[in-house]
Length: 97
View (spheres, rainbow, N blue to C red):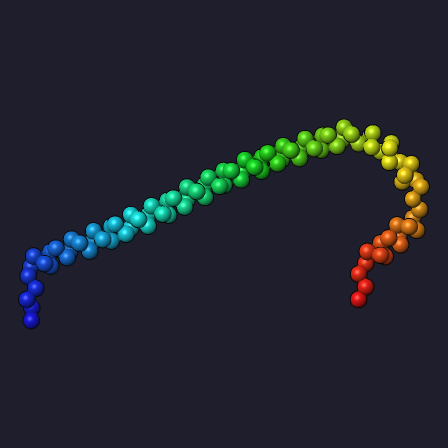
């Protein structure tokens, strides 16, 4: 019943850890690759956020520079609009049940 030779036992004792090592290395490769891609995406998102902050600051400066000119051009129109029209337009926006 026990016809297993000692050489076969020592060979299987070497093959099983080798297979586990190969599977572990493959798993490590994919985990490392995913981590590098995630870090790259985070760096790109941070750069994008920085650019958006600079664009927002630039737009605010442009709006502040153009604000006095726009207020003068829109002032006569605002004086002509009565408050009753604004109230009625708000009523039209409210959804009825």
